[in-house]
Amino acid sequence: MPSCVILDDYQNVALAMADWSGVQERVSIRVSDRNLRGEELVALLTEAEIVVMMRERTPFDAALFAALPQLKLLITTGMRNASIDFAAAAKQGVTVCGTPSAPGTTAELTWGLIHALTRSIPAENAHFHASGPWQTSVGRDLRGATLGIIGLGNLGQRVARVGAAFEMRVLGWSRSLTDETARSVGAGRAASLHELLRESDIVSIHIPLNAATRGLIGGAELALMKPEALIINTSRGPIIDEAALVEALEAGRIAGAGLDVFDEEPLPGDHPLRRLPNVIATPHLGYVTEANYRAYFEGVVEDIAAWLDGTPVRVMTG
Image (cartoon, rainbow, N blue to C red; front, top):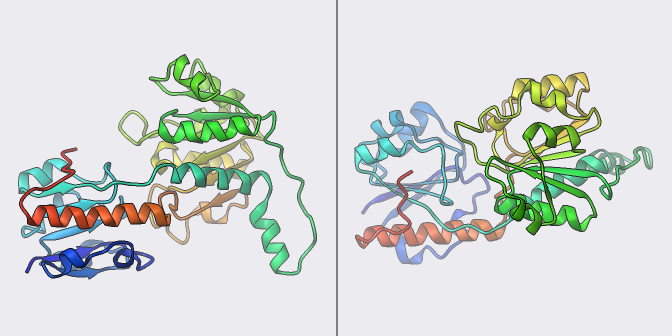
């Protein structure tokens, strides 16, 4: 019977989020709830013919593929995963499949981070539960403020519509953005990234990580922002130069950051972002919702069954 390992199930919910009965008699399933690397990871996977990834929590590079000659099927949740070396997978004859996902979950968290920053919700909540002082902050208004969105694709458009509902001025920018697309969600099109950064009170990032976007926001770009501006990143950590962001936040060159993604995940306990009071952060929760997990793991079950039947579905090649 083929062996299947489900990686990085931090909440121990993978088997509860779908009906696995159709494949449980055909494969043996093992679940890991910890993020493993190196020899410990290889030891866990050494006999597995099927491996299920949770997004990019565990990268699959050429070295890992080479260490797992028995691997036949790699399933990633979602239909995009920049942490998989697809050339190495093809060279080794590993089929890579994806899954459906629920729309909009990361856009929802984006607004949670914006509200947390503009209304000091974490600090006020901590005071409340500690029987501390009553009302210590004065909130920032969204109405009339400028929301700059880098990337007006599916997620960016969802964020833009909410901003418009709050009567914010919404600006969008990407290399491919058209006036028509911007207008369709109540946004204007910034002529350049620099213009968007200079004019925005809140900047939110919604573009994929690739060679062109890695380090897109560095020290020079952060210096263009208003001192009272906030930056939100729920996309991928390396889009912002992390060292430059820490420096800007420490120096007060921008007012704060709302972060759900980081260069290294899980973020080390001694990372400087953890000690900055003007940072509100979540541990990459953008996609972590019940509806999304159900879509993921129902898709995983379908992928396994189809592969066992010799007709793999949602095959990914890069």
